[in-house]
Length: 343
Ligand code: SF4
Image (cartoon, rainbow, N blue to C red; front, top):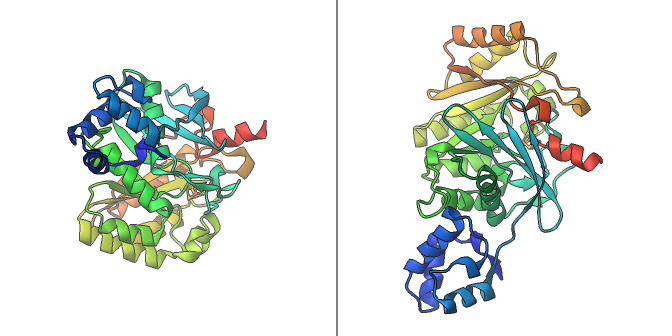
């Protein structure tokens, strides 16, 4: 038995042929699951009875349960999802003027223990399967009812590129016109700098967006903030970024969380500008930190944030300044789950 959302459309078509039925039934099944949000074979009323029976013998739906929700005054919503084995993950829904973005997790816990992130505190438990990743998106769609989910960012709990095969299979289903039909350019994979994954992604031939959490421009500071830097130091990371841009001709976004008293000085801005000066297609996204009480993480004041941005602009770096979202519901990754586990 297998969760049916483990299957790409092509795999489902092959199964139809194997059991001697026309392959167009695969598209019908896909439409029921991904467009109509159905989670039971008996509800797929335009399928022959014999096929519905066969499907329920071979496949199942493991739907996560929404066990808690939290809404921010800025419109951001968080859903806490309980998986079949009782592990809990979270997704975040971020509405903006003309888009609704779903922030999705790829692992239960995380191996990489970044110092500013609540997800690393509990350690790594396991990878999410392709079906569980796709299910997160379906839970978001179900929660949104008639509102249109337009963008996906893999920026929730876990390192997406450390769960590469399940991630990319899920991306294919999310992108499939017969599936969730979200364009690849509206899907962002955010990595802490997992170099082998970036190398592999460069050859994937998909136009998904790549975003890299940088947060420091020297090895000493970055290794302190993000232990993954000891394994893949900045020189190696920037070199693989150069290759990625050359191979894909796609821009990389570098995320830089500004943390008071840690990485927000003008010296840090200069280091960052110098390090990125050799990359043809890149931009820096500055994000004032969400306060994480457990970790002593707080955002710098407004003047410091604007000075940092100005220093990068002066040196020709393309910069955007993102607002922190969902501060009143603790929207930095892992925080809602952490609170739930504290109870
Ligand atoms: S920021 Fe990402 S890679 Fe780092 S601990 Fe959190 S989830 Fe893991």
